[in-house]
Length: 208
Ligand SMILES: Cc1cc2nc3c(=O)[nH]c(=O)nc-3n(C[C@H](O)[C@H](O)[C@H](O)COP(=O)(O)O)c2cc1C
Image (cartoon, rainbow, N blue to C red; front, side, top):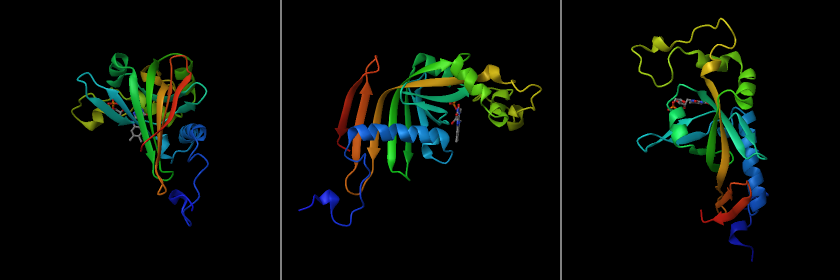
């Protein structure tokens, strides 16, 4: 008798379905594709940062880099944002994305480092198109109260590097990665965790 999860007529499962190694590889494939593909929902994950009053603040960011060897993902932000002091106080963040096309949810726990003038920030700024740089030229920092929306209007630049002083890269080193794959034949959930030395110490299926 065939396993009911593979009943006749059920769609074939992807190679990662019952394979932990392939699951972790696929998770990183999705993150790397999220950097490249603007329409992937992994391009715009949600980031949860603990605020000063203990409430996690959640916001969408653009995934700008993913490096499975370094176990890092990057996003860019404005140094004037209140998330900077929040990140300094609580450098551990949660990052979440769900893509209904692939039926994959990823939840990452990361340790962050704010790069304001180092290689990552400089490289990112140099490779940012003028349209992306514009946000950082706003005369008022994000989240500041303004009397009129026009008070935050972005002026045309006199120099292409205007706004650089407000730009930074947040480097997120993945400490834990949780995977959820939805399938009619049976969902698959897994957790991966690394120690301080970057050694994979947990790779396990979880009940979904
Ligand atoms: C599609 C999308 C992409 C965004 N990308 C970023 C980003 O890469 N970095 C960022 O700081 N904010 C980004 N934002 C804005 C944030 O969600 C948030 O509104 C902003 O960072 C200010 O909030 P905060 O200071 O509480 O984080 C994006 C919003 C949307 C809807």
